[in-house]
Length: 84
Image (cartoon, rainbow, N blue to C red):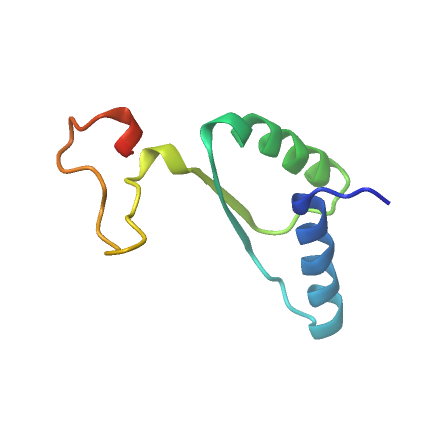
Protein backbone atom coordinates (compact mmCIF):
# COMPACT_ATOMS: atom_id res chain seq x y z
CA UNK A 1 0.00 0.00 0.00
CA UNK A 2 1.80 3.13 -1.25
CA UNK A 3 0.61 6.10 0.79
CA UNK A 4 1.75 9.69 0.75
CA UNK A 5 2.63 11.55 3.92
CA UNK A 6 -0.76 13.26 3.77
CA UNK A 7 -2.66 9.97 3.43
CA UNK A 8 -0.68 8.50 6.31
CA UNK A 9 -1.53 11.55 8.44
CA UNK A 10 -5.23 11.14 7.63
CA UNK A 11 -5.11 7.50 8.65
CA UNK A 12 -3.33 8.27 11.94
CA UNK A 13 -5.83 10.99 12.81
CA UNK A 14 -8.73 8.71 11.93
CA UNK A 15 -7.30 6.05 14.27
CA UNK A 16 -6.88 8.59 17.10
CA UNK A 17 -10.46 9.76 16.60
CA UNK A 18 -11.79 6.19 16.81
CA UNK A 19 -9.65 5.08 19.76
CA UNK A 20 -10.16 8.14 21.95
CA UNK A 21 -13.52 9.43 20.69
CA UNK A 22 -12.10 12.83 19.78
CA UNK A 23 -11.90 14.99 16.67
CA UNK A 24 -8.23 15.85 16.14
CA UNK A 25 -7.74 18.83 13.78
CA UNK A 26 -5.10 18.76 11.05
CA UNK A 27 -3.27 22.01 10.29
CA UNK A 28 -1.08 22.05 7.19
CA UNK A 29 1.36 24.72 6.06
CA UNK A 30 1.78 24.16 2.34
CA UNK A 31 4.47 25.48 0.07
CA UNK A 32 3.11 27.22 -3.02
CA UNK A 33 3.84 24.31 -5.38
CA UNK A 34 1.83 21.71 -3.39
CA UNK A 35 -1.12 23.85 -2.32
CA UNK A 36 -3.41 22.83 -5.23
CA UNK A 37 -2.60 19.14 -4.90
CA UNK A 38 -3.32 19.22 -1.18
CA UNK A 39 -6.63 21.00 -1.79
CA UNK A 40 -7.61 18.26 -4.28
CA UNK A 41 -6.83 15.48 -1.80
CA UNK A 42 -8.82 17.25 0.93
CA UNK A 43 -11.76 17.68 -1.45
CA UNK A 44 -11.76 13.93 -2.21
CA UNK A 45 -11.64 13.15 1.52
CA UNK A 46 -14.59 15.49 2.13
CA UNK A 47 -16.62 13.79 -0.61
CA UNK A 48 -15.93 10.42 1.04
CA UNK A 49 -17.13 11.81 4.39
CA UNK A 50 -13.66 11.20 5.79
CA UNK A 51 -13.26 14.89 6.42
CA UNK A 52 -12.13 16.19 9.78
CA UNK A 53 -11.29 19.73 10.67
CA UNK A 54 -8.52 20.48 8.16
CA UNK A 55 -6.98 23.93 8.03
CA UNK A 56 -4.42 24.86 5.39
CA UNK A 57 -2.40 27.97 4.78
CA UNK A 58 0.25 28.91 2.27
CA UNK A 59 3.70 29.16 3.84
CA UNK A 60 4.83 31.74 1.27
CA UNK A 61 2.63 34.32 2.95
CA UNK A 62 4.64 34.21 6.16
CA UNK A 63 8.29 35.14 6.64
CA UNK A 64 10.92 32.44 6.85
CA UNK A 65 12.52 31.98 10.25
CA UNK A 66 16.27 31.51 10.65
CA UNK A 67 16.97 28.24 12.46
CA UNK A 68 19.97 29.64 14.34
CA UNK A 69 18.20 32.70 15.82
CA UNK A 70 14.47 31.99 15.38
CA UNK A 71 14.14 35.53 13.98
CA UNK A 72 12.42 36.38 10.68
CA UNK A 73 14.78 36.27 7.69
CA UNK A 74 13.27 39.23 5.77
CA UNK A 75 14.41 42.56 7.14
CA UNK A 76 11.56 44.60 5.63
CA UNK A 77 8.32 44.21 3.68
CA UNK A 78 10.15 44.65 0.37
CA UNK A 79 12.94 42.12 1.02
CA UNK A 80 13.84 39.70 -1.75
CA UNK A 81 11.24 36.99 -2.45
CA UNK A 82 13.77 34.33 -1.42
CA UNK A 83 13.69 35.71 2.13
CA UNK A 84 10.00 34.97 2.42
